[in-house]
Length: 171
Image 1 (cartoon, rainbow, N blue to C red):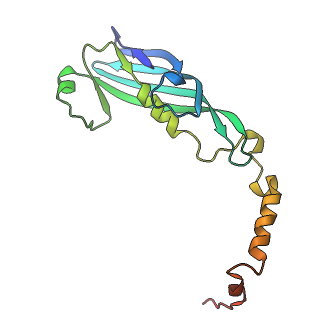
Image 2 (cartoon, helix red, strand yellow):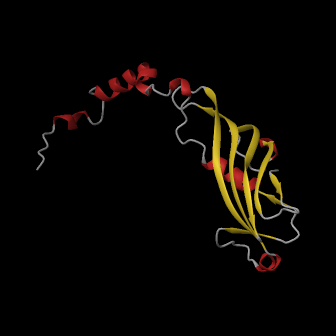
Image 3 (cartoon, helix red, strand yellow):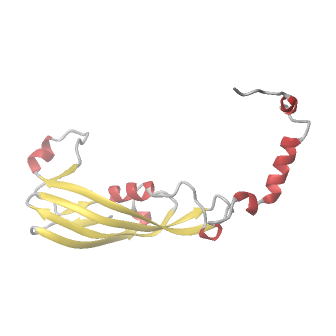
C-alpha cells in the first residue's frame, strides 16, 4: 500500500517517498512487475493538502513488431487535492463531485494506492515497440509475410479481380 503520513503535519511543504511491490496493489495490471515508487511534495495549507508526485514502475511488455518481451519503465505524474473536514466527510454521498478528496480530522495517513494504480495503467503505451525495433517498420522486419499477402491480392482468384478493369471517372 502507498500511504503518506499526515499525522502532526504542520503547514508548509513536505517531501515524501513511498514504495511497495506491485503484487501488493489490488487489481494491478499483470504488465507491471517490481516495485512501485512514488516521490514528491505534499503542501499543507490549513485543512487543505496538495500532492504533487511522480510514480514509476517497471513493466514487461510484448513488442507489437517482433513479439519479443521487453522491459520499460512507466512513469506518471500525480496531482491530487485533499480537504480535511470530518463533517463534510460524513455528509458526502457515494459519488464524489469535484476535484478534492475528503478526509476525516482523525486520519493519520493518505492512501493513494488507487490513484497511483490508475495513473500508471493510463500511461501504458498503446503501441508497444521494443527500443531495439524503434526505427524499423513491420514490412522490413517481416518481408516474408508481406509478399504472401501481396500475391493473394494480386491474383485473379480474388473476388475483386473483376473490379480492377472498371474505368471510374472522377469529377
